[in-house]
Image 1: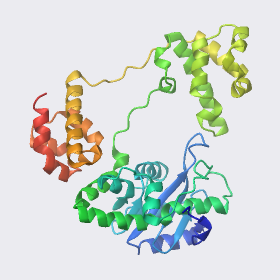
Image 2: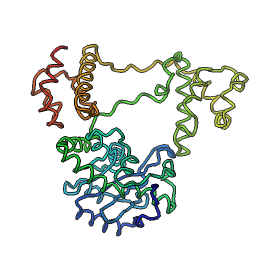
Image 3: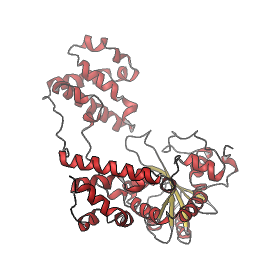
Image 4: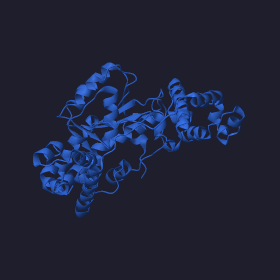
Length: 379
């Protein structure tokens, strides 16, 4: 059945400091706390946490970070090892909570990771809600602007739903993990998830080179695209809107590919019939002309793995796939992808060297270290 949000107990919406502090104090007495966030990535230039949903066994809470100037007390709960924090697909939430507030976590249970370790094919929250709570999720507010205020009662109830059932789902999955003998490996993954913000971030390319097809442009047309991207970024920042709501990547690429030198040619382009192009027509024309005057732009040099590293990576991936097939599990359960890449890069020769790389996953290390070194010995 579809979940009737109005039948859920009223969530407690927290916008004032004193109720916030009282609630946080009560959380420290709980052994389990379900957590989720809502952000505004589809509606703002720079996404930010707009709501933090928290549920105990008995009550649902929604914290409004826009109304509170200090959330540090919540960070104490998140870092308290005595309180288990329950998420579904925690990586995004943990990253954005760290970026916005510096929150770090200990003692985490991720229902998506648990489902994957148990060999489930459907890992989405909707599937787990239906299986363990007998409800179907309503996606009405999936793309809502959570940064708007005031929020409607229906929006708050929608946000409430994502944590209301999490503890029930967690308990069912935890029992399965213990029965299957996979509780220890799950704990290893949960501990690893707490450190997601510490992983090295891939260096982002300049904006124009992130657009598919930009590498095929001539250096001068790439300079035009760079100017078009800079214009779009300025407008998006001023309007506090995501880039795609100003102008799409395909539109900018089409303008750069055409690279008109005359105003008449520019205005005759099919892409200029786009509503947003019409809105910014004069500024876009100026950006194109600045691009013609700019120095030609070459793609940035990117560090590429050498052939030996790529060979090791290929061999390790094949080993991981084979092991996963043998036990009927997702290959990430055998060994997380980022660790496979790290092993290929570092090429450890001894048990001790491999142990340093796999220090956060000691169970995998003890189980697979001989096989991993055997694979590496051929390269």
